[in-house]
Amino acid sequence: MEYFLDMVQRHRKSQRDDLVSRVKPVLERDPAIIQNKMTKVAREFYRRGKEVMNELYRLNAFIRFDVYPEYLLVSEIRPEHNIVDLMFYYFWRRYPDFIILLFDKQHGYCSTKRPDIQFASLKQEKNYWIFNRNQYTLVEIRTWIIPQLPNLFDVGSFTPTTWERYYDSQYIKDRKNVKLARKALPMKMIKKAVNGLAYEAKRLEEEENDRQKNSLLKYL
Amino acid sequence: MSSLQKLEVLGASAKYDTCASTGSHRTLKRSAGYIGAPVASGICHSFLPDGRCVTLLKILYTNKCVHACNYCFNSTSCVTRQRTSFEPEELAHLFMNLYLRNYVEGLFLSSGVCKNAECTMESMIEVVQRLRMKESFEGYIHLKILPDTPYHLIKEGVSYADRVSVNCEAPNKSRFQELSATKDYKNDILTRIAWIKGLKRQGNLPAGHTTQFVVGGAGESDRELLKMSVWLYDNMMLNRSYYSAFHPIQNTPLEHAPPTPVIREHRLYQSDWLLRKYDFKFGEIELAFDDTGNIPLAADPKLLIANADPQRYPLEVNEASYKDLVHVPGIGPLSARRIINLRKNQIGIDEFDQLKNIGVVLKRARPYITVSHRRQTQLENFIRKKDLEATKHVLHDWF
Image (tube, rainbow over all chains, first blue to last red; front, side, top):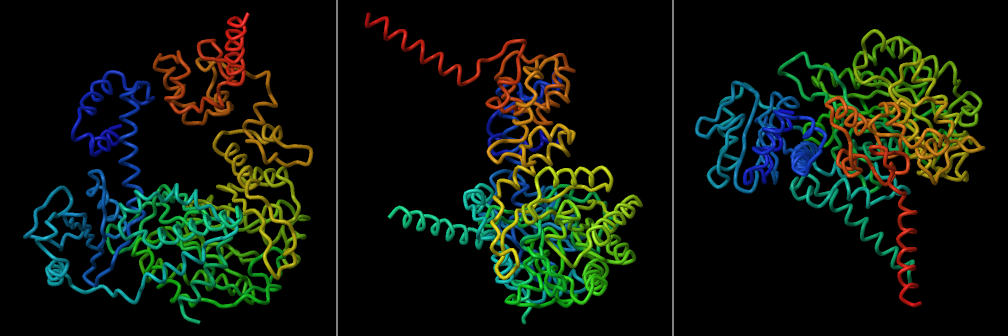
């Protein structure tokens, strides 16, 4: 329950209202009421927690990284809730030797599990360094990293076309179900993942247009 | 052929294989010097316009195959298909590139049988070995075991993979022969599954082993398929069965056979879920079958089972056991657990709305339950009663 409480606190609305402070005493006194969603407040509490967990889960899955030889993975996100530090915990486990750099609209967030990499000129918060996007460029960040590294990473050759070709190869046209796909990839999420789902969004739109065109032809 | 073309051809050849990253509970032994980590629950990295998710890089090592399976995309009879193979290094490199950029959660590696099973399986193992040893990949790997693979290769494959699977394709020997004349059901398939069970018992395979059935390819019934699944769950420690609706493929002997409706696949998954997650017995599932041994496509199997046993209902939610609650349509294991949990805390359910709040689908559950010994009128009756009252009122005004 503590983990869930933490999730609710991260919700953008929880910064403004007193939901968490109202729920906390009930949780101590009679946790079953909250755990089993008996009241309206309990339901709102669960809804917020789930919303934050959902955003975290989906952003972890939907963002795509640009890989740089400085063991640097860069991506762009637009999260609604305060989840950046949790994303880093996830990617630390997945890429322990890499430096993860995430940009939102205004800030850059840099984090790594490597003890040999430090960003002395950046402000440290929780498990990451934070900086203003206008203040430092990606090139500057890269130049800071190079002297701290014993070797560079072999990036190899990769273009997004590789993914696009694979994605198209998996599609079974006879099973076309754009409505279901839209449910799983809502526009809101596509926007949050910025460029991560650009190709998927384009293909879904094409298939939707195709469906509309076909139904119109059928009607005529 | 370039790597990109191979990816396209061999990716398309694997698209009918079903898999899911249902999570591996393997713990990492290293704290650095590796790439990738298994996760306890599946992560979908993308979704296709057909609504299916893309979790793993689902690919064949080669689509060259010596077998002539009547339904298969890679069958020898499919002469028009482009044939190609990856080099182990090429495939490992391609996969790592996609994994590092967060496109996929792991690898699902299958293959056609080129020359013989031993030779192809060796190459497939070379790919996964390379990933684990050279690329230090610690993420999820699902390795397909080819029919007729020797024991020592299965053992080696199992040591690298999180999950392995052997495709049963059909529920029994006679049905299998209708699909493939070049494979032996008992020796090539069931014996391999039994070997995998033995290896799993020794503590391998953190994500277990699975199988897949082609639904409707050999005219088999749902009863036959589910019976076989239950046998595999009970005797072979199988984690789950996948069902893939048969779809006729051009230039195969079954190209003119009618396709299986996708809803049949869905009904089989629903029944399978009842067996695995709701602890239903096969005898109970049998109540849902019609005279032909199939689940009627129009109805949910849980609803059919409940309707076949009417004397059991209505159940009082404040008194029913967990086992009885999960049998009620609209109440799943989570809602049932919540009801029991409330009861343990001396909190009773007084209103139907409370049930809705804890996750019960009232629309389905209402006819089968009572709350504090009160039964809410069924929706149809409720509407009819209201209409009658309105009519009475109008008649009274007239006369």
